[in-house]
Length: 537
Image (cartoon, rainbow, N blue to C red; front, side, top):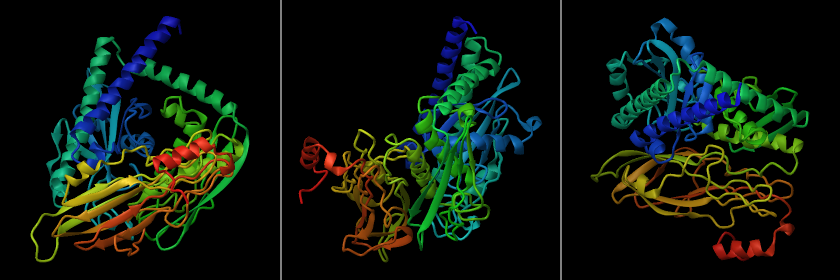
């Protein structure tokens, strides 16, 4: 291809990125759920007519983006081409064909130009409720966890499936929020379609075939070069998590070959009877993300780059099969990067960060008036982040969601969704592991029902018994703590009660340190003390 041809393709590639970014921003601006609007718990992307991901929006989470890359192929398998029409939108929350649990709604829309299918747009978002037991670990099967939507049409030729909407309205606790988010997702894809057609008309592009071939060929060449430069061999790692009633071991081996990197989860514990299992599609998404961070962080994330990663597993807690309960699949899914990176650290010494908090400390609060009192009910969802592990050459980031990348919800926005008060939200001193480079700090969050109210909450926490490990001589981060303000210890998972007049206190885990603590500079320690990151002993 000539230099001018390369330049033209690069310009079109940049335009395509702007299309999917506007697609994602539409969802951010119109979503009803605070988890989407405030935290960015979503994904958006454009796919070629074969269902291969061409581009993703920067806005969004790796778990959503990388599962969506496979989910679109499931939609194409279920809905024949001859039954696809202009104005269609398809939907599912199937954990094994979508993004891992029922609370994630995935929508796919075919994009036509002049009657010809030129692309698919897809997006995913977490909704506040899907019925059943609610968002928590207490289900014993997926059937208890909420309404299941098979791959089907949300709209055909622009006409919304009102029967589906009515079924949803009577099966969820917050129908206005949930139905609103369905329409936001559909609008998100519609904006992407309109912007793509405008782009194609402006530059007289009849299809995306040439642009797609350019994107994929350049990506493959770059990925092949990066993998070729890696040391070859197989390395293994294990990581112990809190589990539910008892600890659960995650295991992985990483094999680097000439033209691929394979991750194998053999050795991980069997499926749990509780809703903490992780479908393989979600475990694979975060394994690929971890590999991508190390191998090629600057290469576009698309079907071509993901094709170099092969993830396999027998049936176990990281490859759960139907009808296993999977509501909290994100907990172990978010642990997968630390698991995979621990293996890669053996192959690439001095280049891999220490372990961090990993899983988000999500909490779902169901608040209501106390007995004999008047007030309002509400379902409130908060995403909270512990500390990242320290990096080679840099301290860990505090209260930062790695690997999920979602934003921590502002206290002000959360308080608007229901009758709760967030009394405290601050960094947790001494929670980052010591080292030449200090682990990131966790947070302390104190939540109470408003006067005359009480609430039940679903705890979705980990690292409360097994601390994030340091790397290369760095110390462990602090474990998390769940308690009431009177000192009553609470469990790290499951539905529990906070009575009127009490406060729930969450102390989130910190990240592990990197390098021998004796090598930390006195200037760095003085700055830690001055900022209150550590307390003088």
